[in-house]
Length: 284
Image 1 (tube, helix red, strand yellow):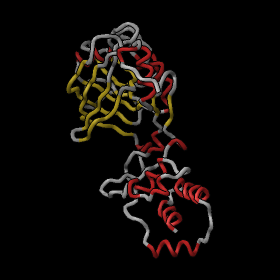
Image 2 (cartoon, rainbow, N blue to C red; image 1 turned 30 degrees about the vertical axis):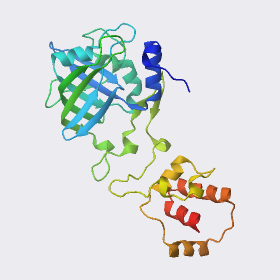
Image 3 (cartoon, rainbow, N blue to C red; image 1 turned 90 degrees about the horizontal axis):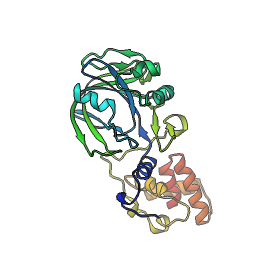
Image 4 (spheres, rainbow, N blue to C red; image 1 turned 180 degrees about the vertical axis):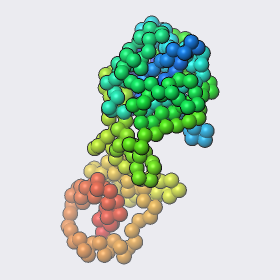
């Protein structure tokens, strides 16, 4: 493992390490407007939401690592502290890449990238019609983290109005993760698509406390087959099967397996999310 302080390496190499290791990063379009009413549209992967009460979104137009120049988006929000956060999906990603080009101030990226601008209801910047989720925001604070190339400018926004396309909703009105088809930015020219087999569900503990990996018998915990993820799944149960349940399972599924074979069978059950059955097999 290499070890270094950020000041030990060139800024462009440090930038590459950071964005290549912290990913995928969600991508949004920030739509702003300057004091003269000129619209600007720019994609950002230094972006996320940071609360729901109040609803807060944060993104960062970093200074150019090559020139040190600040982005038009930053200049605009300092003039007009409003922004629309438009979520970028796979069907938009090529146009989004086109809009990321460093066009001169005053050039309309809606026109350059072929997106449709539509009026917002509460603020002045336009929305991207093609985006399935559009958040009208007021800018609460701009925090500058430096003045050199690559330095960030955290724009903290409060969402005051939202628009969500019915096309990405479930019957009960929630956003369907399969339908929305979002993308994430990786390092270099790499992106990823949150769709199909790339999506998986993971039960959250919430108020149910799992027994923990430390409660798993050492013979299982020190398995040469079961991974950390497997142990985490086993440790996320709130209780172990009863002795009667284990005996009944063993009677119905009589098997004589070596420890390695047993743990491989348990691993298959865990991959199928049959955690309770995996525990019964382990304890039988």
